[in-house]
Amino acid sequence: MSAELPEYYFRVRENGAVVFRVDTENRQRRIEMDQIAVVNIRNGEIKPHGQRDLSERDLQEIRSWMATRTELLARRDIDDIHRAVDHLNLTTQWAQSKASADQLEEVTDTLLLAMHDLRSVLVRKKADRLMGKTRSE
Image 1: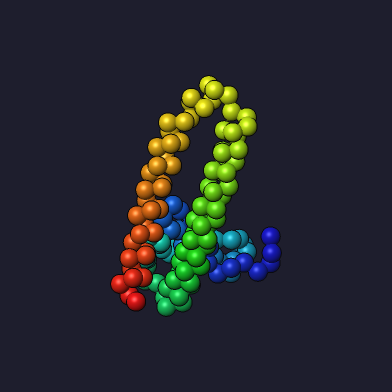
Image 2: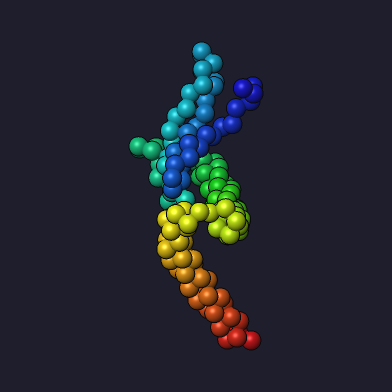
């Protein structure tokens, strides 16, 4: 562990994080983590823990972490979609060259419905974007 610890620690949760202030400036030089807030990335809410008042520094650090985390999650989302495209291609290759009749029977209806649903959404969203461009010209 490095000698210099960060002043804040964010324990990631599904919709945000629990925020702790890290303290090593005590007699035993133990690491103490004092919960100061809970944050929700989806709605931007910052709730102080208990009766605590958050300082401007606390709020600045929390908002900075929230912005960085939101960017990271957005990058992960798009990366997941690129991986899904790869998986679709691999699935196509599998269906064409390796899949048995029983395996195809097991997955065909589910795949066709999922692909139909995806295609419908993509076509509708593309049409909306094209209509938006036409209106703005």
